[in-house]
Amino acid sequence: MRIFISAGEPSGDLRASELVRSIRRIAPSVQFYGMGGALMEASGVHLIRRIGDSSVVGIQEALMHIPDLLRDFQDVYRSALMADAAILVDYPGYHLLLASRLLNAGKRVFYYVLPQLWAWGRFRISVLRKMEGLYSILPFEPEFFSRLGVKVRYFGHPLASLYRKSIEGVERRGNPTIGLLPGSRRHEMRRLIPRMMSIKGHLEKIYPDAFFYMSLLDSSFGVPASGNMEVLKGKSLEIIKGSDIVIVASGTASLEAAILGTPAVVLYVMSEITWIFARMFARVRWASLTNLILGREVFPEFIQHIPPEKVARTVARILDEREEVLREISRLRVLLGEGNPVDRVAEDLISSL
Figure 1 (tube, rainbow, N blue to C red):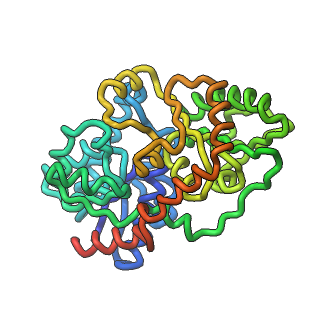
Figure 2: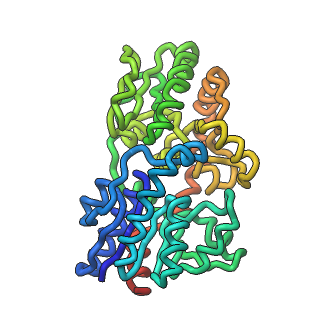
């Protein structure tokens, strides 16, 4: 059996590689090919299209890349037609169009890490209805999709495996030790690093003995060295584990912080065009996964317009309320599930095939 599997950004590359490994343990003869990154390639996927670390997120960013996306899309679509089935992972703007074309051609399509229709774009439900299997990683999604007449399977969140891992945190070198995680995408880092450095300046006034760790995947941003900050490459989990609090880009890192028992303050900045559309169409109160899953703002959020001094004061408040925050995030363990959800997705998917 030949399966086409596709991911369009680094987080999807990780989720897809985990799923490929689980499927291979059950059905070693399955052949995988598709679009993805280094992690998928390492898991044995033959890549016909390689993604970088600059995935397209946001309306303005997508408009700027339309010619490249359309050219690549035709190649990916024609290649996917040769598979017995397709598994699409996250990256909804691209993958829902690809799914529509594949479904019209009579192909079997599965979706893992579902489009966030609960946030915006419920009109896209018609494509999902035609797919053979939909696999969620968020505990509130099955009920949401059920109200729309769509069956979704939820076996837990893959990050729940962090509860079972032993992660050695960075050395606590300050009072407090504060982690700065500006994300993994270039546009995230470009927008958030200057703001985090400004917040750092205000925190130094509140905590003269503070020490900071910054996690960067790309060293080309040239963050200036200082006596009270160390920049580490690819050590986000270690920074989260060893910090008293972290300031993070909205995304996976906020949920990682909650699972590892570290309070967080969440930041996010997008292009002004994307921000305008988000305010017009978004149906959610929070941006971070931790707050969405818990149903309340446990991690304070600052979206788009970020006042550095106010963020610094909020960090100080959360440090004072640390025990209360830890009690709240302890509720996640039950919601995120037990065991290995990726293996269960793989078993269900192979059973369907």
